[in-house]
Image (cartoon, rainbow, N blue to C red; front, side, top):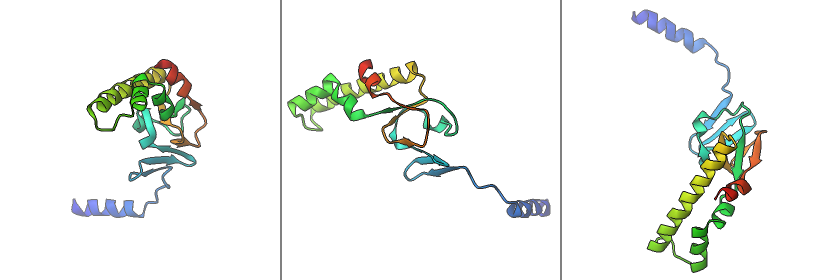
Length: 139
């Protein structure tokens, strides 16, 4: 049995595998396929693990700072000059983040996006649309 296993392993060791078409940089969470690159850290809505870089699913991009600037709770933070870590800041940023996530989800589902990614978080992919104005409208 051991000899058969050793023979099998030696046979596999000499078998040449094709170079992988998908490369992952786990340190930076970047996935790339040929010329398509997706930075997982920039995904704001959707499941990057299930995203097919070779596919044609629609991807939306977002400028999160523009969205947050349109959220009333975040406007209050700016207007009042609240310090990060204060009780009022924490309460308002929680409200703003909840509104942001709800708007992302609504637009992602309504527009049938596979992902919504921060602007610049995906490159080389052809079916990408700026969804920022739609997300702001969904607030």
